[in-house]
Image (cartoon, rainbow, N blue to C red; front, side, top):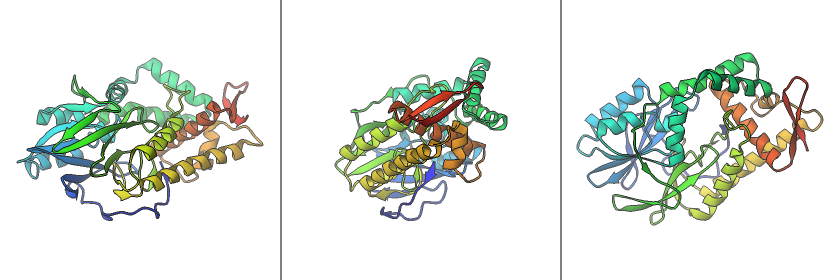
Length: 347
């Protein structure tokens, strides 16, 4: 995820709530912040008033600290008005990590898009020896060193421990559906790029937009290519989704994202994100103009700061997303050397 300026946006709630303590951010909507053990050190959870209780949007990761916060909430502020349903926006552990545990504990239904539900199941079961070796070969061809490859494979396997088993059945939602939660009608929008079928909710009557990770105020959500889909075009999906959101959601909507602060200025932010990724593409073209480069050699040009293993995996995947985007559009081409490694150059 890349840091971007957000001086053009308006933040009605400039200070986040204390960890584990929900506050009202809009009428009938509670904002809960939980900690994450990563550089991006938090996730925003939202509780939407739903009759006698609260609909919960996302869960945080599966760790002892997050479970303890949920236990305290269920025994305290939510004891008289418990969760009524659980909606998970996408398969990443900070959003779906405790879905199975929370749904079982509260006896509530899980709601997700089909791709994200199945994606969670896939990643929880990934790590057969032949899969690991196939991914290793892919990373070698892209120019990564043994240490980085080992860290990436370890991170992929770790998904299982950051999540819980999902319920064996769920309620599927898709683009164009609507959910009635309490007295509100929420349109279901879906987006690509950061995740294949990420769910967003938009209350048109009140101009409230639950954006998940699709549009964030201060960073660009990670948009990555992964080894099991090496030729995918997530950046193309992401930019297409941004354009669609500019037409579907009002400019003055109140954006409630999964990270950073809630804000006003959606269309401005969409334009900033689009410009940011356009510039990334130009930087790669410029870097490869006189000398074809391995994807791994491009990473430090785009991300010059020191990265840990977790950050390296995102930086590498995002670099590939920009390369694939330009390959799809004929702006770049791959050269495969005698060593079997793939180098990119302007077409």
